[in-house]
Amino acid sequence: MTMSSTRKKAARRSPAERAAQIADAARDLALEQGLAAVTLRAVAARIDVASALVAHYQPNMDALVASTFSAVVAAELDEIRAVLAGEARPAAAVAALVDTLLDGTRDDVTLVWVEAWALGRRNETLATAVRVQMDAWQHVVRGLVDAGVRAGEFEVDDAGDVAWQLLGMIDGLNAQALVRWNADRSRSSVLHRAVEGMLGLDRFALDA
Image 1 (cartoon, helix red, strand yellow):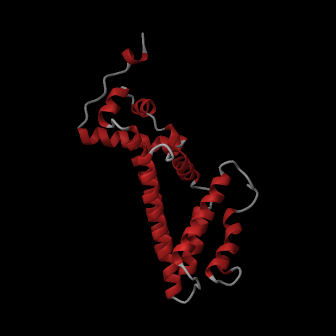
Image 2 (image 1 turned 45 degrees about the horizontal axis):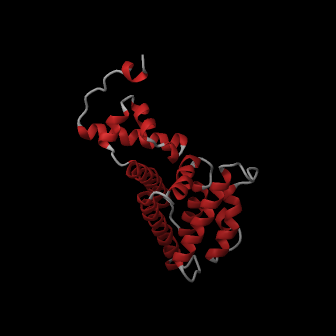
Image 3 (image 1 turned 45 degrees about the vertical axis):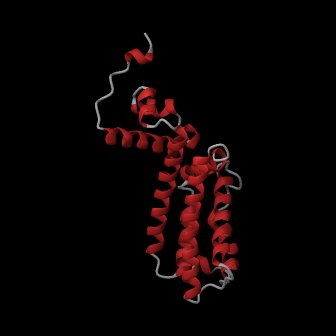
């Protein structure tokens, strides 16, 4: 007897409920195993339905991978916005940004990012989603740098360039941590000195 013949008939759900169930399963797979794990069979197995049912609701797996990526990283950005909003001064917000993103608790999202950059080479729908989310992140960080300049805390020539460089350094350190390289050093402390120089801050200002 085959597995497909023994599977219970999928409980009836409205189209909206089924679509949401598929999206949730894809997101959970991405966070647990990486974006590459979001396949038709894996999503179907996750919710114990036939692959054909998933294909009916998501006929384009490239689009599902892209939307899954967007859901994961947009949720993280919302969390970071809340963290930044709780800081009274731009310098403190920058320190919170660096420390939160490099504290090692978001490696599941880092893996989603890293795989998205790689998979996006052959999935233009995903590549487009990656560019949109990178723009959203840069917009938030650039706004933070601009606020510091207006407050007289930061001295920078181009807030956009600083935001781009800062995100690149954060992404690089987190990607390296996935293979536990330089694991004996604090990721955020490594970056504090570089960020202070970029922003024209006194040395150890971000440790305060």
